Amino acid sequence: MSASLSKALGFYNAGHYDKALGILSPARRQPFVLNELLLIAQCYAKTQKFTEAAAFYIKGAEMGGPKQAMLRALAANMLQEADDSFASLNLARLAAKSGVFDTNAEETYRRYLHEFLCLDEAQMDDQRFLDRLKAGDERYLAAEFPHRHIGWCGDESINARQTKIHGAAAFTPASRAARRAAPHRFSDRIRVGYLSADFSDQHATMRLFQSALLQHDPDRFDIALFCSTGDDLIRLDQGSRDTYPNLQRIGHLSDPDAAALIRRSGIDILVDLKGHTKGSRAGLLNHGAAPVQVAYLGFPGSGTGIDCDYILTDAVVTPETSRPFYHEKFCLLPGTYQANDNVTRPLPSAAPRSALGLPEDRVVFASFNTHRKIKPQTAELWADILRRTDDSLLWVMCSNRFARGNLLRWMENAGIAGDRIIFADPVAYPDHIARLQAADIGLDTFPCNGHTTTSDKLWAGLPVPTFKGTHFASRVTESLLRALGVGELVADNAEGYVELCVSLAKSRDELRAVKEKIAAQRTVAPLFDTTRFIRHLEKAFELMIARARNGQEPDHIAVPVLV
Image: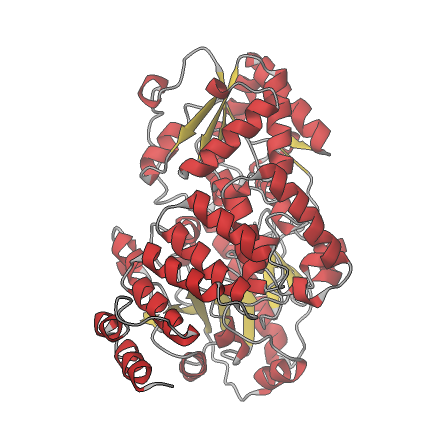
């Protein structure tokens, strides 16, 4: 390493990025060696000069070698940070098709195909990727994060074989056995710890769960929250976070240190609210933080490689046929697995259509899921519905302008005029619940359903037809509908789903009746009964601890209905 590079690296490690750039000034240092190019790129990235960072990653890629695909993928990510979606996609495509297999390049390219709604290209690439997964190609099993994977692949047997984990090595039978065998003293009250990076009332997880969290029986349970929430999300909180019990920040701790802290706290059950989603602390769980570890809510599927004994679920999203594809044991809650907040969740009056740019005399289908859930299958089903309901509109949330253009072009090629698509941006949560009530019918996404977004629509009184799925993520809406007592909105298959949506759109009486039923069920059905939910959750914890106290291995549990 040259003296100048060594000095620049020292400034970089100390956080003095401008000083590092001063030493490696592009105006003075030509030609560069690869490590200099990479350090310059990283300095620009750290100072949020993303276009400049991309340029130097590209220079590094142009030097050739085994890292060229990875460097182009990094450049693509920088261009996306610079809000140049078109250029980032093209560069990601070049990286993935360079002839040099690289998991970063594969992941980046596929992420952008779905993020930017390149539906035809995504459909072809999904098939290419699926063929490699079915062939057992280990490179492809490790090429995308499970949370992205389940969004397009509904095959549980393939979902169960994914190996990519956020910042951690997979647990082993030996590490799991050591965790369970570690000395632990149970007390009269059950000590439950919740682990998450989402402890803010503006995150979807806490919008569902926070009122249940606050209703634990203090005579039987001690509750602690182990928080890795980032400062940006904390700043968005509107006051609820201050009411969360015994919150301890652990984001600054390494996985071993955080696991040791939780062990010292005497936690009996550690509930992971993240799984394979952003902010996961899989490594902490795999260091053995508690005698009983439980997966819940954050990730709709098996946490492959993450050491949890149980997954809190229900008989709809995980029927018995799913058991072979989970290393966790099922703890089946009655009704639905999903907590819902009937205490702080707002229910404002409906927003008038005139204020939303919607016509009064047209049927409005609404989708407010994250737009990357609009997979090729979803778009095809929606197009079929729109073709069969001539006066209808599609009202869809999508902020990315490049993705909007791609969806419009795809729909126009499918015979749907562009003026039948109305785009929406995110708004404050109460305003979102108000605007949902202006729609007629909610459209679900496949193979990954709406989760919080589906329960939001149902809370707002909006019917959300769906059809039976093939993995957890594609069965969520069915679970919610059945817990609300409107199972008639669940079709057996995709064709039945289209028929159901068309029938509701063409019969105002039928649509009015189902909306009235949803409104009536909201106050009496299990779906939005927070107190009922927490009683069943506490019973689940008691059954888990009873087994642990008796020295029994975890096993499948069906929580009985409490009256």
